[in-house]
Length: 190
Image (cartoon, rainbow, N blue to C red; front, side, top):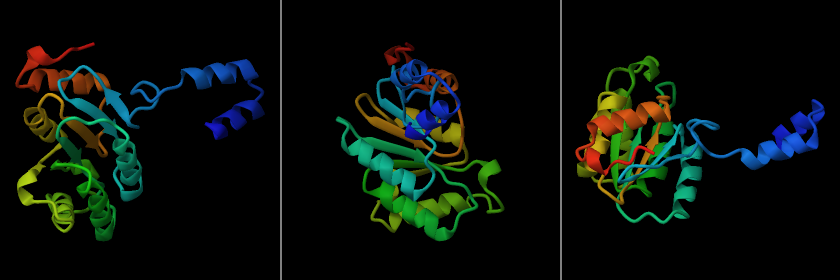
């Protein structure tokens, strides 16, 4: 925010316009897509973030510690294939401590020369190496399949964090969840 204010001031934007912009900016999917977007209107709490590495995951975990989460915590995530094997291990070490259940997915376009299933295997190994039981880890072939699994696993009052590379709008996600939910009458589309 400070850098944006300095840039705006340097460009000659008046202080009142800068103040209004700061006052109306929020962490929404419209203003900051893929950055801790809280999506309301579902039986479970849903947060989207593009985090696909250990540093970003660490910041997210610290944010979650301040939230009052009542149910189980699910994490649906992936990572790009152009990372070192240590990257996946470190990423998983951060997530392993915070969530109760995991759904790992891959997207072909983000494999970056890795074999089909290799990223999912590295992420699964990273979780298991950090004391996560295999029975709380599910692996999906792609984003849509993973999202379908999450929709069927999460119950009212649970918390779902979706991390990764796939960039979907809130409208697309809402439509998918509403059509795949086992209890669509519980969803409030506001």
